[in-house]
Length: 130
Image (cartoon, rainbow, N blue to C red):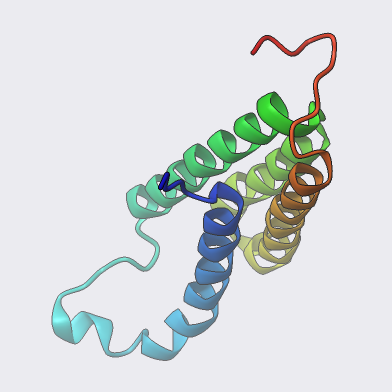
């Protein structure tokens, strides 16, 4: 039996986990320094998480594009969400206004990719090389 990772489900899960993290972290803000944890406003940690999310998401969209639907629309929507996350890191005063569209774009892109992969299953076109 062959086992494989559903990259879209993983991408949606990590996006939702990120949203929960961003919503709940302020509640624990006052207790984190007691334990010596400093991930709040830690730019290296934030960029690392954005890079990890981009890596997982890019592979998911590459797989969907190459093996199933041959559409760049989900990846472009995902890229817009990632651009909002990067913009959030640079313009701190707009942080909350950029986070919501970023999460919506990323989750929607994974949902579209997932649906397009299921609809097309294994569509071949002129650019298919497998």
